[in-house]
Amino acid sequence: MIPFMPHTSTNYIILQSQTIYMKFFIDTANLAQIQEANDLGILDGVTTNPSLMAKEGIRGTEAINNHYKTICEMVDGPVSAEVLSTTFDEIIAEGQKLAQIHENIVVKVPMIKDGIKAIKWFTDNGISTNCTLVFSAGQAILAAKAGATFVSPFIGRIDDSSWDGVQLIEQITNIYNAQGYMTEVLAASIRNPLHIVRCAEAGADVCTCPLNSILGLLKHPLTDIGLAQFLNDAKSMQ
Ligand code: G3P
Image 1 (tube, rainbow, N blue to C red):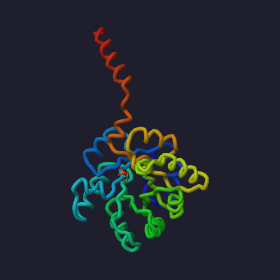
Image 2: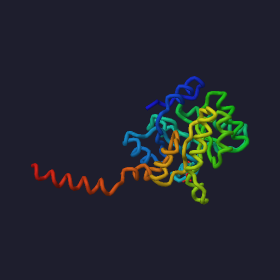
Image 3: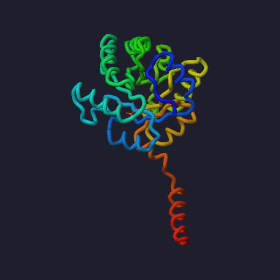
Image 4: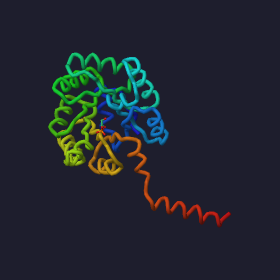
């Protein structure tokens, strides 16, 4: 596994050229779930968003920052922390503060005009970014052009509107490969294990998943039946 490195231009090139398999992030701010996924030994990072943070009952800047710090100390990998601002100056001020919490913080910025400007500024100033709320290839091109470390297409929400979210992952991956963009495609809004499998097929660099989708990958009835039979037959050997 390639360790996450803070976003300097040199590190970025090394990281990108060595990334050869899909990474698993967990999409939650729940510490117990983060711990459970981390204990599996397959966790590469964490993504959060304001809805996930609010769900944990976290209130106020100090509590929010402490929560991000705790997550960074639990998981050795990028931790996305989303800005709540929507204007350039405010996004920069807020993102700089978030980035100071821990070197693994990735500043999550919405796909809006000032967000793109801010991503370019963060890129130029060595701060990693995750461009969020991406629903089209055009948006993904802009995010990559601004130098985003990650781009987050929301595939579950696209499926909810009867479009094919995974098809967008494939399209963005093809565009980035054709153009040589170094932004990592981070498939977000994962709703089930099949999404993870299809994102792997589509060439996503990262899949950020709820814990139950990750654990769903374990499930197959023939595994359970086969194991029960093996354990039963093994009794005759004792
Ligand atoms: O973190 C962004 C994303 O994963 C949201 O997922 O299920 O709310 O569409 P969802």
